[in-house]
Image (tube, helix red, strand yellow):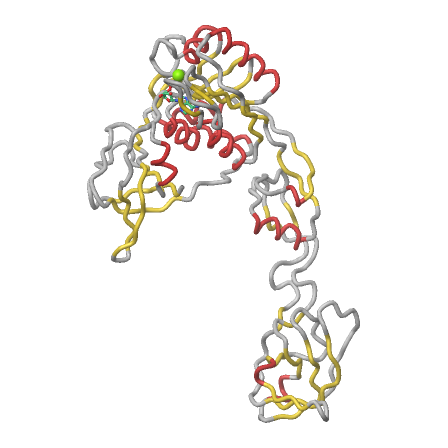
Length: 403
Ligand code: AMP
Ligand code: MG
């Protein structure tokens, strides 16, 4: 690491430095069936009006409003119009047309009476309206959106609701950013895969499973590697292979000050480091740079730290590649139920639970806060964002990321 390499810097500085190392993401056209959690690379304009025609919002009778103002009024039921009806229907004075939800409004009708407000006489095919109708229950052509309207911008993260909107706009395929292949490499002699038998001194490798899920959440493709033992040659081999096959590398473990923190060592000797260590708790050890021209994040090994650092450091970098702020974190403002330990000058992310009392949402610590305690984040409900000069005192407010 060169003398001038930024060291132990605030998170926002680290994020800004990381964003300088850009990589291009290509676009691809995919079926909307496959579009969940992908990011639009082109805006979408509606290919139709929605609804495309005036239609009934209720099951009931289409009538002429002015004929219903002195109830009760009796009408001849002239026909039935169902959803999908292809014909031009029209209403004559004195008639009521039985109509189903979604069916086109017959020409001349301007009001719908819900079936509950009618007295039906099957024998002479008449209906008596007991109340004056109201000129509503008609869904007007284009009232939701109009032909050519731009509804989804470039950078939109496709959630289930937005995918339905794409379909309603008339798109069977959409252009999205091609997922980056992201190598996720755990390091450590002590790591065993879940399902294997633990021997003395070993633990289950858990970090890369959560990190991979976060990568999928961001719309990219995680490639999870087996654990690399703490050996510089093995690490070099794996990093070389990852740089060849993937667009981005994320490692976990081995970036602290220990003798066996080989990720930091090999990056110092053979890679490029843009910064090392950031002022956040937990999770201060990460590094960022490149290995063989491939951007690399070296995340801490402690499970909470690696997860937290991914969310606050890696996720903004991935979003910047698509010029998007999505998928964003859900943040809310809460009141501290008790004192929470902060570290002056650091961003402090504690795992908290939330509860509501006296119209306020409170954050309380109810899990052991060790950075090795993955249960604290998995069972917690939120992560505090206690800024560098926050006192952390009971009764103060802060923002939290909802987990
Ligand atoms: P390190 O940064 O390599 O010193 O690791 C810090 C702590 O995190 C150690 O207790 C490791 O055993 C643990 N750790 C490292 N990698 C993982 C992993 N992939 N899954 C779970 N724990 C890990
Ligand atoms: Mg280690």
